Length: 443
Image (cartoon, rainbow, N blue to C red; front, side, top):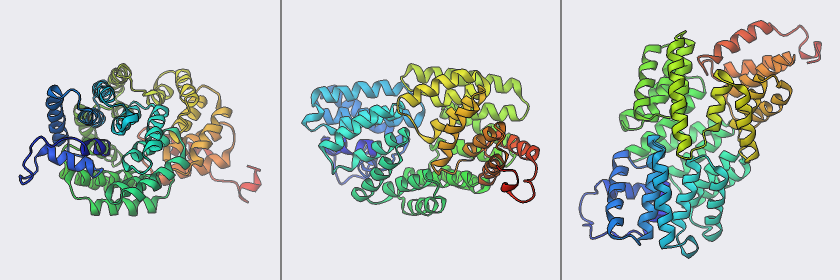
């Protein structure tokens, strides 16, 4: 919703009666101007409205910018990457009618959002910083800058952008971004308190559902799957179109060993929101249940989704590398992730994935450096701790390995249907620490 706000301010109202009850287009406009998400139905209405308008007003730069940003948002929330091409065309039409240097910062923000959606965080940073330089006090650029800096692993810049956004734009959007910042830094209590405040203050169904979804994610990461299910269910009751909450619920149901329900939820969400991540998770759930044929079929579907994303210009290298490390060719994963690192994509997620891929190709010494870097960011991610522990175990650093494997299971005992059991097996094989503590072994 934040992406559309600046452009909407300058769009003519085309004779609408202000006294009428707000319709879907007006609701989408109001949500965007507030920096909040619009419902999918309202977003659809806004897209149709702008499409019709620009047909007869092809030089209306703000309307083209709004349409392009709406396409980005629709593509992101529907997992239909084909909309990104439409977004790029609309945003270029906007900039052709009114260049960014002549006050069309809205289109530049849209281009930054598009780059983030395609996971080209360096390009998003360039677009966003151009807008910030030209209009330093406009709040609408900061969400795209936060996403870009986070994708690049620039914690300092992401923190500063989040703080500036909070200064310029009070309310639920700022609280949501602050909660995410705390979450990424491992400050669980602060993240939870801020996320709860955002949920309490949310007003529209779409905004409320997003806030409840965040609470569900936080509960899942704390290893509280029952609480996660409750929050995801609340999000779905608030907004039945919040399909990401159905995927979160599926993950939590699997942790509760309610596998039939989890499988049904994953299958349902993949028909509504076919994100490659969900396809990978479903495949791994099948594999954990010994359903190898179903797992292979699901991985084949994952390959198709990744190919579609690649054709639409979306860089899913990190997810593909995760798949190759575990179920394909780890050497391919290393190649993909080294390319990401070279592109300055140095987030905790990239560091963790690269460390694990190197370990899987027998390069555990080098992998250890990246795995430690991921954990040292402070983020409380059970998978990161598990990967580091397994690499340390391979290298004979048994004390450190024991600590990190215990941390993984303490953080979230059911963090992965495949890896959580492996963590327990590895801990059992390591046994109890020697008498006298770590100093007794020198580790």
